[in-house]
Image (cartoon, rainbow, N blue to C red; front, top):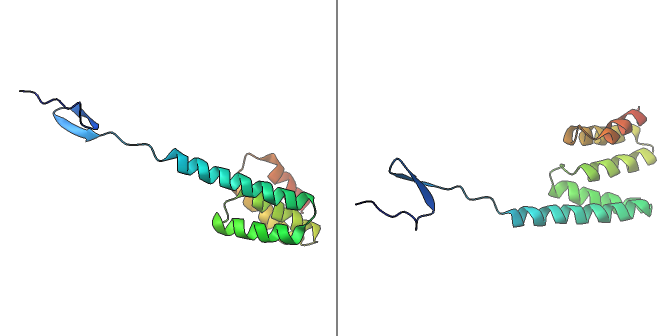
Amino acid sequence: MAMNHSSLNGCVSSGRVSAVPRPTNTLDRDAEMFAIAARNWLIHQRYVRKEFDICKLLIEEELQKTNGYNEYANYVLGLILRHEGKIQESMEYFKKCHSLNPRNIENIKQVARSL
């Protein structure tokens, strides 16, 4: 007599039941992406207002939260450092941006402007 496996969360193949992989929680991932975008917006607001000290504090916090993997935060910090005359430091942040997103031509342009 064959068993009815319709109540199991899996599929039957060759008499074995294998679990169907569940997708990762996209809500958590979406919430994190929204939080990063919101913080990027705040960084942008402070930067365009030329509130560089506050902006640098926000960027420092953001880079700690993301382990340095926020392209926009690195980019704006590079802009601020170059504005302050710290050309070599700014170039390092633009290089980091390029390593995070090699397809973004603006990152390469900023490295060139820092030479």
